[in-house]
Image (cartoon, rainbow, N blue to C red):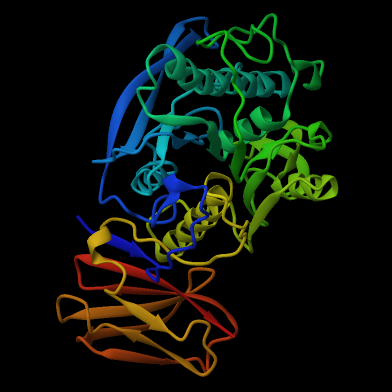
Length: 425
């Protein structure tokens, strides 16, 4: 199996005196070499066909961790509200990586499917129903951990004051609605919570663990949208936002959202509109625009996808440690984290200077092996330069023909793959 290491320059940030659980690399980098997973049933509800469905989640935790009061990230996959999985490619690596930083991560399945699809023409009523079901399930997952804290001795050793909800695509749409939709009356009048199955129970729903709070501290939105940004009010929770400005699946701004590019469903406010509202109200947030990119560019195994994943992981990390550890809020790309093996970090590979003006060097001297290939990609994923049959040496790259911007350097020995990020001025 290939091992991947992403942007490996490591910096241990200063630790505020009050944040004793944030010592060293914890919550900032991979202080654990591996993570473990437990499958849990967190609730149940009837689906759109009125069939009772068990709701399951994978709970990822750092191996050999004795820490307590650990922050919790609840993670929701994408899939057009039609498909997707708690172990899908859009969420699996996030689950593993945040667990290796010391977080507890709960990747949840939720009720999917849309009334009148595929046997019919789905519309606004069907779309709102799908969102409400997902919101109900997400709230049940939050309540599950609050209930476990009270009735089961906090089996997962979490800090219930530091729960964050993170979603990708449809999961991000759900996350934003969980964060900023306070009552079902805010949904359009055509949301049929009476005749469509699995939508009863008001804004909290009937998916399990009643009597406990579904509140959480912050939201991470990766290519999502909100029905109406006017729901966002002064004092609402902070957000970490990501979206491609060429997204053809979930609108970047305010526009109609289509199911499978065919069926018009709802007018929604995409992440760019959400960001504008948060800015207007003075709500703390970070926004990362995937310039020129379509939907979820961080998903995949190409060099460009890995680079966008790296950016998403690190900026989310920076957002989280602001609230968990008291670090200053840093919305920029700062230092990278490894992806699979902490023991190989931090000095296995180096690229410098960064940013670069005339040239930069990639130091292969400390890598095991002796036959390497090196490829350079621009921010759009286009291959710019390729070199093969490299040994343990320092490779100097001229920037003469490289316009200012971000570049990604992929080094491989045929088994291991290393990815670094370089800025050219």
